[in-house]
Length: 271
Image 1: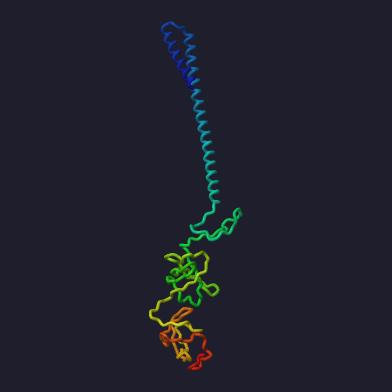
Image 2: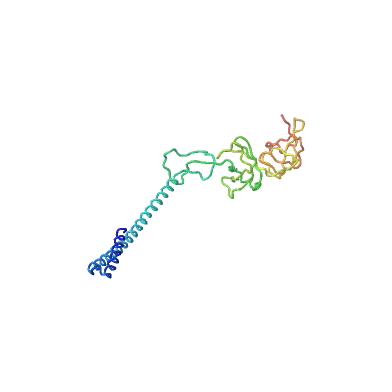
């Protein structure tokens, strides 16, 4: 391109010079016309060179665009492969402590297979199995004392299952201040639900077969050698203890085992 432009400039200069010499009579017409032909040919050569350069530039841009497209495609493939590789990494859905691992290294597993259990002990909850017959006394928000691990903690009932299974109802207990120390996933615990608080109540171990808020016949120990039959009125209670509304005074000793065989006797002798 530079050579063609230099040749065209030189031929144009020669043609102008010969034209001047022709006008002054120092040069014949034939050399002048030859110079003009050479200048025209140089202009044509320069135009063709420019056209060829434009075509070459367009072709180069097309090749660059095609190469860039291949590069972009390769980058996309690399990104896809990296994402697939990253997807093979095993990650827990939440942070916590690994409780168990169910597979060995190198094992081939299907998608969604459980391979380990991870638990954040700060978010542990307890699921109590409460007898269906006691469900009427249970409500969300009640305080629950849970013992397990290396200590105990107070929780609250967060949910009562809508249906019973096998005669029991699942009751979820959460811990606003954290679970018992040393609590573990799927561990067994003992719990007591605080259904009510009664101040200055007289309570006894629940007599055999006695129901809440019902009258009951008991034998009160007198003098250590005999027991006399009395009538008492029970209130609410737990499986182990029940409130006595009337009939038993603080300090009384009563027999709470099954005494139905002596129901007709006002007094029984103790051995």
